[in-house]
Length: 509
Image 1 (cartoon, rainbow, N blue to C red):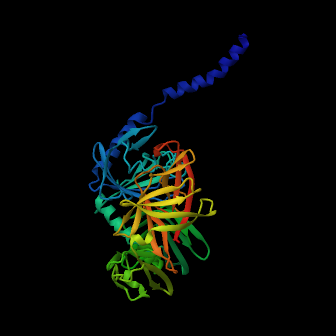
Image 2 (cartoon, rainbow, N blue to C red):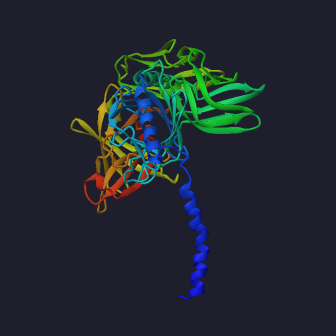
Image 3 (cartoon, helix red, strand yellow):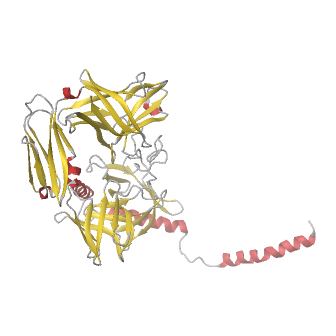
């Protein structure tokens, strides 16, 4: 190397060498190393977690866009395990115990490191596409610990995957079990989906979509939407929003008055009594056998509506939260239909009441539906008895490849019941399977064999038998049927979906 060039490089390096020397001589402003400080922080976090006598509530928002809204978890910690309760569980009082770890991963982290179906539900992918598929629901089970409040009653977390800011609040006066129990009763009896109020003298509406966990506040000048999570006595938003100069972060619900108050303000929304509230709790149809029977429904303010049957064999009574529908025995020898007219605030809705037996449902049908692109289709179908069970056969896509759904008759509920994941037949060289979907093909059961769907009979205005699809899976309502296909009869090996049927109506011929 040229000597002059070497000297130039050496001169350029001297400032860096001098800077390094100066920095080395400086005294560290922290008495402990970074790893030691994080270790102390994690020790303190464990102390705070385990010292909460009644445990914690976590308002959990999966998905970085909070598309699904928020869900409530309650939990208690000991030295090694966390006992988790979840509002989505079949039994909200049944916990799952899982191990947890507090560790340093470029910062303090809380990790639920043993798989359990509660904490990992939103984060576990499946083989299907769409929400809940290979990307799961964009949920987290690893959380970065951002802050512990000075009073040690709130822990701020950040989802490691979603980046969502979440809050754990210390439970006081409630146990994890009692919190979930009270919240379930509150949600089950929340009859309103819209409420009216005023902000600074201007009329305002509050719309609550409980299924999507989203609220919308409308004023004369603006409309603002936000995802929310249920509390045991109200709603909390993912983050505050501003409406007409008011900051809105949570609502307190008064069940007796049916009101929602924006916490920290004098703004009160009063739930509107509309007939759809009754429909949401009772359904638009009641179907039963020919024997005398009665149905009791429990929901808030049930006695604030007017009920008028249009036939003498139906009687209705309401007291407080209880609505009772009495139906006399059908001795006519034929199916029959009546209606209950529900009225409130000048609006009306109709509940159709039908009496029939399972033998009235056997025979040929026309199935009308649309696919997931809203294209209408019509197919032939048939219901026949197969031993103690019943077969719903769809002649689709042609009579050479009939698709047969096996069903059981539930006499108490007057409906057919069918399991997801069952084999239907073949479509060419492929084996076909049954899958349930919501009404827009956004969520579906994929390869699950656990979901139960319903085929629900009723009578239309012409006295013809009409069948509809119902039931739930997870937090979704079954709104259609889907056919999956695979190379063999093992549903876990499916290749994908073949076709989707939405807005289904079977009409007996």
